Length: 427
Image (cartoon, rainbow, N blue to C red; front, top):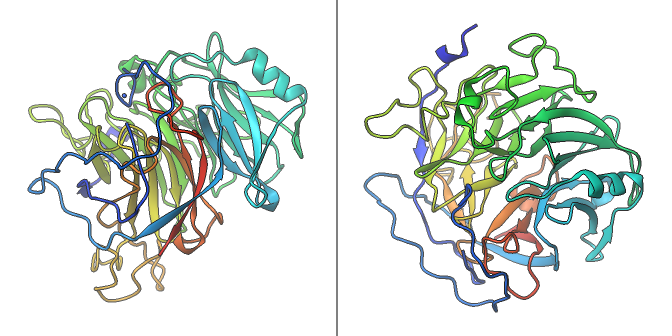
């Protein structure tokens, strides 16, 4: 099957909207703007005004929910990956320190992960620009922890058993993923099928994204031992999709639809719905396509939402019963893409005005609900946002979200207490 024949209709480009909140913010050359020289702390102050969007070009979001923020823990140095553990604790990776920590949200405590696995990670991780200790995920089957790290020669996925805060010896699951100072990918997630999905970057070589023999610029689907998963588009290959620039966020809705966040280059960042074997266009197509250049959907899979790179630079991704969420670095906001009213397309804003229920990925009759208009939350309130996860896996907005800030990564303006894990609640 030639995946270039797969097409999808582009739906929404996002408008920048002002979040309904009263907190704070600040805000990159990698995927999220030029690095800032200073990492000195600045006090929490009023957010700078965002540039006015071109309302004629993109729809304006409606019914943007009000949210509140509670700090859970502070003092995290360049936090990156975020994975829930049994009992409500959270596993967080620290990119540049090549360390894992366990956070107890109820107690507000942070505990270092120790043990032979922790020692091995520290020894073999080589932080460099956007590389370091990146994504983390817990296998719901075995309970093992999987990590994505940048080494001296490549990016690799490793696994080990976590007993409380002690990480056992590590086993290499997948290696040979091209590395660079930027575009290292790093997204890890277990799908509803039980297989491990890995988001990689092009490591600065856009053409490698189209080379299906390369692991760069891909979403990979493998077993927990690193073998190509059964049912992959090309038997014997771990490649699930190709034509990606830099994938750091992966998640699924209740219907089984897979979504991925994608860093653009200079113009458009993307939210993609993932189709097995799909070509997502890079390096020929960015977002819906640039004027005078190839367009998305013309032999490639079009994004379902897109943003100017100054408004997003999306890293982490989460899905609740109500919406898809993307954590924005350069954009310094949390993007919410709600599920619309009905599978027929009514009430696409998800505001309850149309017939049928106004939320959840699947209608009562089992039909899949479309995505509504993107909405910006926390605009400038917390600075750069790296990751997001539901407080209750498989839950809804009412349960809240965990969000990691990322102002200590060399491209932000850290404030007292940065970086932090916060809980976002709605209403």
